[in-house]
Amino acid sequence: MNVVILAAGMGKRMQSDLPKVLHPLAGKPLLSHVIDTARHLAPSACCVVYGHGGDAVPSRLAADDLQFVLQQPQLGTGHAVMQVVPHLHDDQPTLVLYGDVPLTSASTLQTLISRAGKEKLAVLTVELDDPAGYGRIIREAGRIVRIVEQKDANDTERAVREVNTGILVAPTRALKSWLSKLSNKNAQGEYYLTDIIAQAVSENIPVESAQPAFVWETLGVNSKVQLAELERIHQRNVAHQLLEQGVTLADPARIDVRGELVCGRDVSIDVGCVFEGRVELADGVSIGAHCVISDTRIGKGSAIRAFSHIDQAVVGEASQIGPYARLRPGTELGADVHVGNFVEIKNSQFGAHSKANHLAYVGDATVGSRVNIGAGTITCNYDGANKHRTIIEDDAFIGSDTQLVAPVTVGRGATLGAGTTLTKDAPADSLTVSRAKQTSISGWQRPVKQKK
Ligand code: UD1
Ligand code: CA
Figure (tube, rainbow, N blue to C red):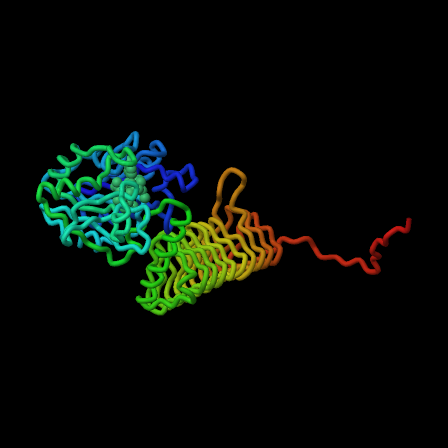
């Protein structure tokens, strides 16, 4: 199979400097969706025709299995396919896809490909209530005889509701010969790929059709409105898959998955959550409202409470995170760890049963098991030039409002008194405190406001 992905169109209605096919749907460029679907078909050649935006498209999406071919100027869909002719293997059929039609399923394409077989042409068509703008499928005695573009169509042709989705499969040797005979004598002065249908018919090559399982599989993006509509369709599909797998979603219309969300049994997700990259939620995990979680693994039975932000972290089982917790890259928490509100953790490991329940910054730290980190604790990990590590051994107790000036170690079972600024290691099993002595002045009078 050869695959050609047309992606040279300008996308003027996007009102954007970014080439249309690089606009993200579910966090991934439109064109990447099409490329990933094409990869399911294991093509022997996959060519992307690009045009607008300079090298932005190839430089963003370059991969060993893709060939990017520039179409400059853009003289129509037929002209676009002409650009990749040298890359197409003659002995395998060619599938044409659009880079701005992101949601076509591989199974729909398989159906189309099998309709075409080795020798036939096959076009993916849909019936629309409002076919305006599309090429119309003209049939005689039930057989497709040609496709006529909206701007070239007469009233009878315009009344046809079966339209060309643009996706087709053609025998490659024949395709090359048809392309070489295309003309641009039509209402738009373009080389229409769709004109190959009439050529096939005149050469007695059968033209078949297939229909997608869902109309949205064929919808393209020409504007931000359409992009937003397809985003919702895609998210609805993802939410339905999660529900089918047994995930509880407080509202399937209020979840956004921008990547891969892998869930165990009895996972529940409240409203307004965003998942990015690869996120794994083990059995029994619950995610509170409005959490943003990226590239993270959450262990069995853990609860992530509302408004938490978690990026590139690992959370052990039976842990409780949030509300309002922030776990930054390199955070690795053991089992039964509690991280409470307004606690930020970065590049740090916590052993089992440790807690940082309120208002703390823990960065570049190795925290043992059963450690309690009091409210207002800060690891001073950065000296303005370099980052240093803090080590807090098992069973240590860090009093509130403590600053740990790294590099520094708190020994096993050590206690730091509240307000300590720790600049030297704290020995195991001892109380360490740095604090000005408390004094009281009896009869102290507060200043009073002077009269003018
Ligand atoms: C095309 C079809 C029409 C079909 C419609 C479905 C032709 C002549 N018409 O319409 O029958 O109903 O798609 O949406 O094929 N592109 C290039 N280079 C070009 C022109 C287009 O790469 O020179 C790409 C665009 O980026 C886009 C796709 O081809 O991904 C379709 O182009 P577009 O202009 O949207 O389609 P139409 O020609 O209007
Ligand atoms: Ca279009």
